[in-house]
Image 1 (cartoon, rainbow, N blue to C red):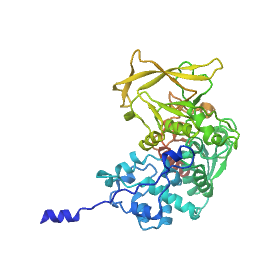
Image 2: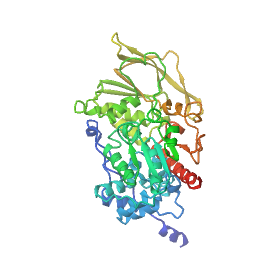
Image 3: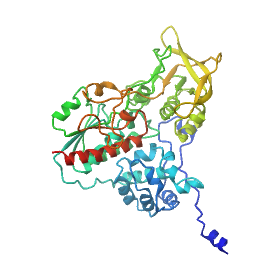
Image 4: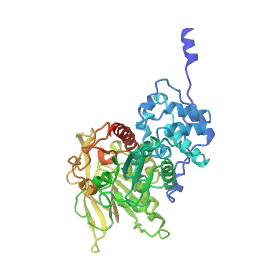
Length: 473
């Protein structure tokens, strides 16, 4: 009887409500968003799968400290407006996070429901709530607090900069956000394709940050227009550096100087920020070729592959020196690339690029690899197989190998400590740098990482800056 009682109390959790998507054969010919979002009923149904754990492990996996069970409970009750307010109390960019954050290795990986099935779609629900609020025209900035007589300059308007700016504005500080390019959003607008993160979504999030009282100055290249010392001399009491890591990275193999060889940064910036995919409606051309090779296997590589497909390439190769198991990209991005007919050339490494007499790339010589013992990353080290060289015919090559720190600002900042790779040295908990009153976070500190980790650094920095300014004379 006792056993029967236990069985009667067993909770049966329904299957996950999967979000509808554009079919692969349709989406390869457009730049529209791939996932289509939840309806109100679907969101409420998915939210009811949450067990409302008293000790919410999911929240411990969130770098921006969203109270996940509380906002999901509100979604289950169809109180979408309050759910939006709950999220925005700690995260000013929920529509972005719901789309591009790797929930599968953060909040959702800790979901108790996921122990016996699919975890609750925390990212999908966050996206739904943010979209619902925007679509219903109910986005409201919280009441502005009493203004403080301290000013903060935020350099860089990517996820770290937007987060620290919004958090400090909510505390009453005067915040000016400086962006080098003509559009606010940093990597959110120049690095992530439209089909994964629409520019209108980013702009709506930027508009919300601006509504908090943040002053935004675009076309303001700090390091040239002003230096960090000049900003502090002009009346800013603290400075946050969140300029990302936008320097390109190449393999240093013969032929990389040929025409038709891009860094992923250039390729995606031309396509995303400059809307080259709409040429000639927008006058930034991008060469549309038939056989494209993308070298790398991270999220940026997947973005490059899927963009090249949409630009009309007949064959797009993903060239990676390890196996699919070691790919660092999100699983869903890898699967979507395969659905869109990307050709995976795994255990393959380029050794030289071949060009014609006009200086254009025409081929890529590669060597086959095998996996040896694990290296420092924990992944098995790729080892060349002698005599296995072969040539892939290509007319475009995109190097998606990561990024380097851009030295323009750091070299113009005397006393700013850098590590051997040129990244800013900052305290892991406070983001404080070697210069009093100067803080840094995001990719300029960590190297290439995720949007949500940059936002987490922004939150830490905002708390530390508030503490510093509250105690300084």
